[in-house]
Amino acid sequence: MPSGWRGAGMGRSAEAAWESVLAVALGMLLGYYLDRWLGTAPWLLLTFLGFGLVTGFQRLMRLLKQSAPGPDAAPDDEGDSDDPTGGRP
Image: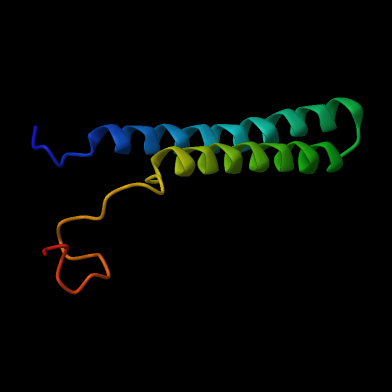
């Protein structure tokens, strides 16, 4: 594999996307069936949909925090720094 290949990061992104979708879908299903059983439609569906959305969003934020470079990360060698000399003396 090339040294710049980011397959592992793409795998984590796909995992987080699936977890987000499943959290929302499971929240909706649980709320729907509880509403049918208890006769409280649509309140439990909306409540558990909200729980699913919050859970999915938290998972995506956790992934972003894990994949973000730290404050001490070195700039690329592509001239991204503000130094006009490119870091050369």
